[in-house]
Image 1: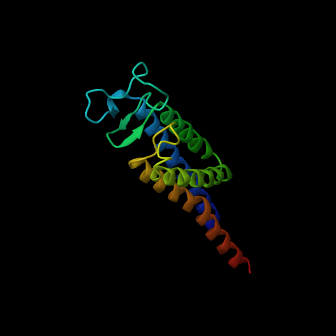
Image 2: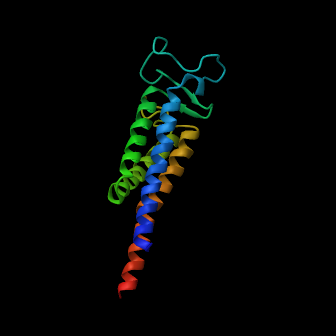
Image 3: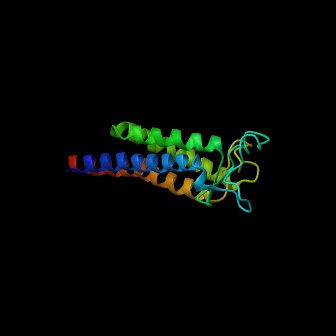
Length: 159
């Protein structure tokens, strides 16, 4: 298998891995047994007990990742996009590049006091910062750096 096909497969598998990871995290956020509220016997803030959209479904997936219902929907949607982009190298590259840019921004927002709740919509703080940053760097590497390396190699071989 030549460098071009290897690079394209790596891009596709990166999109698939990110898609599966985020889909599983999103689904786990909807599973009460996998979500907990620190210092409480409740698994998450129920809809009838929530005062606004941010607190609806608020809890920690596996006790690690802060989430709410909107965040779970977003994770599921991103996961499905990543999985569906696996079908072609060009769609995987577009997904990886878009994901890298968006999730680096989200990771940075999670570090800022005013933006760590995405302006009152969903939690971006805590361990979300690290998982978003790591996934964004992986997507950026496979969506930007690997294609550039493969292209440089092919140009050098053609000279």
